[in-house]
Image (cartoon, rainbow over all chains, first blue to last red; front, side, top):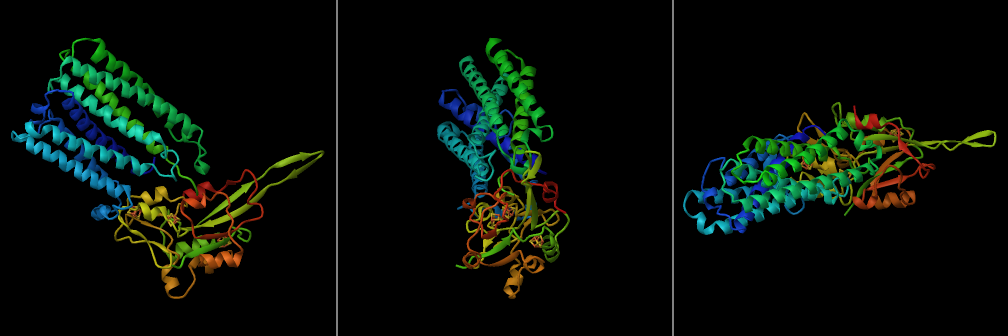
Length: 288
Length: 205
Ligand code: SF4
Ligand code: SF4
Ligand code: SF4
């Protein structure tokens, strides 16, 4: 990993977590859950819209640490016609603004009437942001990133952290989900975690076969391989824990297994950070 | 539109790195940055033929800076438009616009843009645009004792040197269409070449 890539690890993971929360909220609304009262909680950590804004805000602040000249940051919008970074920054601004509108309107009674429309707008701007983020990395001169895996990993990070946030909020009884909705989210989460596991294994196989020129084998870079094994272990444990906590142990969401749910959230979050660290560490480009 | 380009004669280059030093000196580059790097390529092996051993070992050098590409992937993707192309084809960086995101360094297949941590912005070879405006040659071209480097209009260089070769370890020309005319060393097409001074070019001093 190059110097300061840790800022990008945090920026991309938190932004994707934010988008994932909004996608899940929209999905729940679509499935008929009463999400109105949830988004009317204003500046509270029980409010998923506020959480999404907070994640996007922290991510934006951290992204400045990546820049060599943060004071020139407004110039980053200069090349909307050609640069995916410019487009990503514009998309992030629009997405954050759309979340703010939903939250501010939530303080009044307006949201009930317009909530479905607002959430669809939030979700669309979030998906656009996700798309721009993916395109930044899919470059013909960077073979390890120029693959379906970049998109798959960014989308699965978003969905996985979004689903988990809702499961956690419902465990803490901040969000009232019935057994059916909770069971659906948990099953969905297990499916996404399994897909992440398989995708990471396939991608690693592809990386192992790549000719990195004189950059040297990816697996021999520092503790890359050990981190990969650690991530695979964490993913497997996460799948088992999700199945046990939310499906096998029965009553959802009154089981009151807060601590285990927090532990699962922490495990998945760390796993996502490790996955993103591996993503940046696999960088090499063609040529000299 | 004019398209200024470098010419490099791999058959004549001795690998002395005077070009590298002349560039560093002219641009007052700090430790950690070399805008022109000299790659040492070697390969071949020994084979037994009856009672004798024969070899096909070879070595050549490649002096490389920014190639002021016709389709510069760096400029296309620079979010600030800090990277721009002059009328004569020179690709330059306007450091007043640069945010130091390092994306150009990620994507350029020639490793040309290099981050200047003191200024917080990118820098790279600008073909000594100031010298060219004064009617002088780029610093590296004049410094080369073997006359292995030259510069001029791309088409004229191609005509003068009878086309251009593609040698290891350069990437496929179609990616950025580099303005670079190369005369290959006679062994450049041999099998299993590798860069043997990786540490030196990666950890520029
Ligand atoms: S060599 Fe690299 S930095 Fe120079 S113009 Fe081409 S793509 Fe840009
Ligand atoms: S580092 Fe500067 S020159 Fe390079 S892509 Fe970013 S803004 Fe453009
Ligand atoms: S100065 Fe000339 S001979 Fe020496 S390394 Fe550079 S190109 Fe080769």
